[in-house]
Length: 249
Image (cartoon, rainbow, N blue to C red; front, side):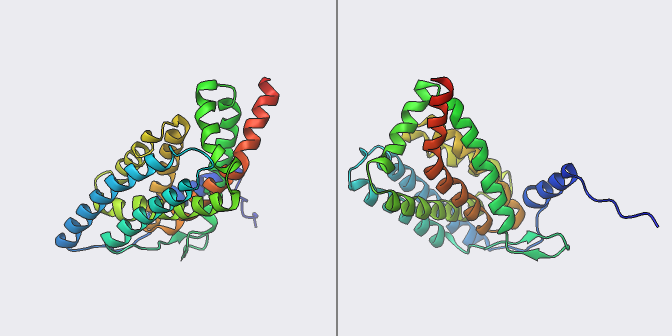
């Protein structure tokens, strides 16, 4: 009897990508036309308020206590808008034994992979002054303020953003290109911050979490990926920039 073939790393990677980002888990999330229209109105109002509040928060001088209050307000806006828009689903993921489970392990893996890509990118960014400057300004909030408090607010905003962008807004967009539309809108909300790398990060993170939302049908997977990436960037990005200084002088 011939032994069963052991999947190689390429096959494993292909299966992982398909399960986590390509093949949707079956579900039925139908809602009435009235509920859908209401969701769209709430999502639109929340988008305007949240984008303005985010731009204001990230332009506050590092070390100013007002920054903490402003970022908390941003999180409240995204969360309240998402919850008020309608039902939010947790979501399910495919497993190796053809069952479904909560999307925890896949999401952690995607978050770490995205984090590694951006940390490698930070080495290049650190050598380009016009990209490095805005990033340093953003990190100054952690350098000159309370790192534990900044980390807590980063986590709260990560959860809130996913509740809104991959929860309320995603459902409000409808069935025509929700991943592309929510990703672009998510990136546009960061333009007002004046940080080019943040806009690029929003595009990459928005695409990955949007695909997760399409596959899992819920917000848990996107939340886990977002938190893994954002907290990792907060804590490790300064080391990536320091490494860039050592390499490029």
